[in-house]
Image 1 (cartoon, rainbow, N blue to C red):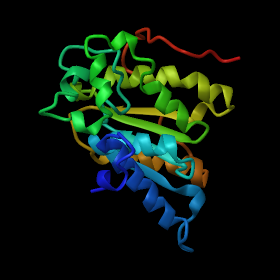
Image 2 (cartoon, one colour; image 1 turned 45 degrees about the horizontal axis):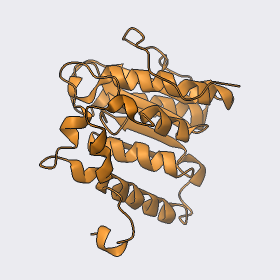
Image 3 (cartoon, rainbow, N blue to C red; image 1 turned 45 degrees about the vertical axis):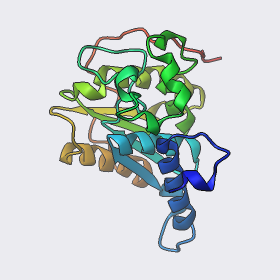
Length: 219
């Protein structure tokens, strides 16, 4: 594995996987048949978390599409409804604590003290393209939390003059990456990369607004 090669780092496995994505980009940009200005990265569930992290850290990735990524991805740690995978659940040692830096579990029960939430990571993608795709029936992945981090990241995209680069899409159904998700990805990419008409409204959200503390305001 990668961890033993860098013993000075205490990164979790999600970060290792994201690092791997960036190494793939290293190769892609050397290929004549690849348009390096149009590299897109997507993933579902844990791979959605990885896609968002890699996309936030590597500005060579032009379009980032986390799907059903939930806790540690596009979902909020601070907005939790019944049936949602919480910080406490995902960081249990017998489950997925190894995905994260070990100190994250110290905030279980004190999520309000977290110095960040996932809108920080979404904002790192700006001014590039970000499309969060989720399912209304995928409660475990916290669709409300995903909506609210989308809303909370919007001021950064607005400030950078690209309000339409922060997009969101919901479909009916559960935890999967299905044709409507791929259709949304291709529609959004076609519009921004190829100037095709946009088939849907990627600002429409299904849930009432719930406050999420922001650490920034547009100047």
